[in-house]
Amino acid sequence: MSSSEVLPLRRHERFRTAEVEEARAEVGRAFCPHDLRVVGRSGRLDARMHGVSFADTGLYYLDYGAEVVITPGALEDFYLVQIPLAGSAQIACGREQIISTPQLASVPAPMEHLAMRWHEGNPQLIVWVRRTALEDHLGKLLGRQPRMPLRFDLGMDLTTPAARSWLGIVDMLRRDVDNPDGMLGRPLIVKQLELLLTSQLLLAQPHNYSSALHGEDAPRIAPPSVRKAMEIIECHAAEPLTVEDVAEAVGVSVRALQEGFRRHVGTTPVSYLREVRLDRVRAELKAAAPGTLTVTDVAYRWGFFHPGRFAIAYRERFGEHPSQTLRG
Image (cartoon, rainbow, N blue to C red; front, side, top):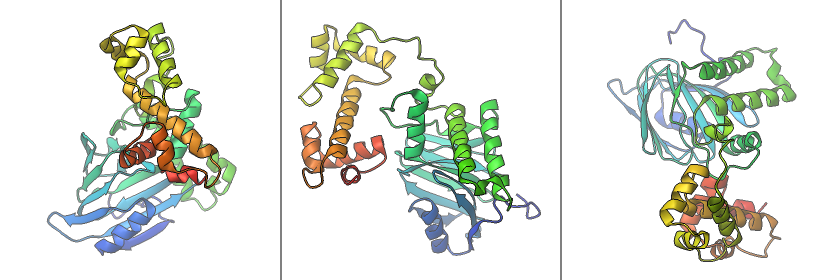
């Protein structure tokens, strides 16, 4: 982007600095704590951020003015759509890696480790979405609460018609933010635009619920053996239960049961059991009177014997720590 062009969100400058620590702190305040290092030939930072946040979404312009390595780890509480306006960036999230360009945005999974290398000349427009809000909205569109965390494909092809439609909504928001007499001073309109932005994102970018959201799974009905296995798991989730136990009770082989779950439920029997148990833990924590129980007691009762792994699984599933649920 040349200096003669008007920068996005120009009325909402957050900072401009040549100091790495100041840039790290300011960007961390907007998103999350992270490590920031300047690399490459120049070694000189010229960072600036513009940004505005709403109830469950935000829009940011970020340019480091140098080649940098950014390592936030897992984002945990929010989703980002990072759109290069020029140049390129290397994005690694979990086991996926892409080279992000103005034609290919990145949508990191909040529960996966994220590491990035933004090349010099790579300003980005970033859409921030609160994780709980997006997953709740997905549940309303599906008509059921998602059992597994929402995970988008890392690369977002911005040349597709659906992505271009979503970009049109982003651009409308951006232009209105820069208009002192725009619509965004009206809370009701802001809420409607946020819902439009998140709905179109869920429809435009492939994710692990895309088939269900687009109705591709509607004609698929689980066979009796799978339905019976699901009932057994739900009725006996508090008891010691193995895949072999469930397969024997249903009268099929373990392999057939696993294949049936994969085809008709989109997960494995073990994962389904874990999700049912996590749901039961959450229900018990939410219903508990203050001081009547502990997170560890409830987790143990539902078969989670490793507190650290349980806490990670719970946070990935619900976007908060179990102690936060217990406190209401």
